[in-house]
Image (cartoon, rainbow, N blue to C red; front, side, top):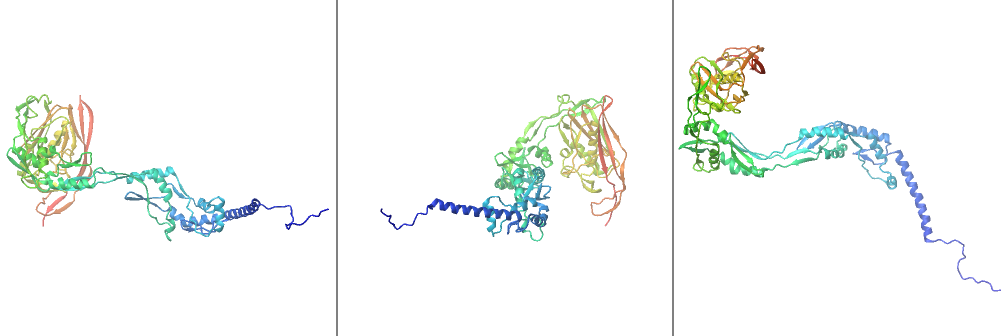
Length: 591
């Protein structure tokens, strides 16, 4: 029997270790370790905030949730209650957080800091973290409240887009800067509020309630079509040359200079719709300007309207036929004037204006067709004779007499009479200025204005602009009088009677009468005056200087006058006109 021999190998134990087996054992140990770390992390997270954790610079590391909440309330609470600065374009507004629907939820913030994430890696990482994690605060935003607040702020801060332009005033030209339109974008602003609230609360030092830098809210911008470059061009190429010197218009051989001050009242530049500014002149207004209207009348006789009269039965007839004349038209004036405005010297700024024949609007053939058939109203004001009154009242009546106001047109005292200057036929007299009499050109003309006002009142047509004297003058009816001032106060009425009105004006040394001829809109117009109320006694003042005039005292008061419209014997309408008269102080003049 053969015995087995030894080969030099180790005896077989019956168990073999493979590579996968080794890895499996190691992996199991790792899993056990990972689970242990995760459990430890969860245990730690459940108890306190990780060391080094901050919320907007407030250190809450190592605190429990309750402690963290208290710290956040103490450190961030004042800042969370402080007004919030909001920048909308170039404007800055402030609003209370509550009004904006903003609030800081410190409980949720503490919870977020204690549980920054539920993932295993995040939880385990906290065991070994030695950094300075910054946890954002939990900000609540009530969308409905925020939208309402932002809507109001948007309306307040909205800026309309303004096109660049050029303005003219008192003989000077200035550029009008373009403005970009700005409107608040409410929808996008909600995110800006939520994200920006308390962003710098931790950097405010000891005063946690101090306002931080304003939040920039998103806006929508509308750029103007006419920008700075175009306004500068229009200013340099047209506006400044236009205002550099007078222009001279030649009308039927007569030279009429027109200075920059007059031109500036009627020149504009207009956007052509493509962003370019083109010059324009209001030729109609320029023709009516007294500075040009008077010289034009002297340069060539315009049409003469037919002169009317009223017979004993109240019927209107033609006393004198009208005559054709020659006149500068709006088109001719504009075409001649604009090329002169950029001329470099006197010769280049002088040009001829063509005239054309114009027939009168009122003639024997048109009187009936226009509805001028009867006397509609008439009023007379009497005054104490004085040389200046006789001259000025007579001159104003002369300029008004024969005025034809077609249906729908508006009549203006200042446009018809013109500026009360010596060149226009007026002399110095007494006017009321700052509550007392003083000398100035055209004194006494208010008597004509008051007469026109009453003729208008009883004609039943619509007043457009009027103003009473500052204190009461005894010769005028209370609450039914008017004064005028060149450049500041006019007397205007609109002819809403449905027919044309012809104005007759007559003056003597002691009275002025204004009569409206046309067709009555109402059977009768009555005046019902109320009592004086709110009576105030005058004071005593002392004046000085060459324009001072003594005056006697008179109480101030309120008065109301009803204009009653009668048709078919019955009241069909009523208007109330209220007037306040200040006291007429005693004024003495001396050194």
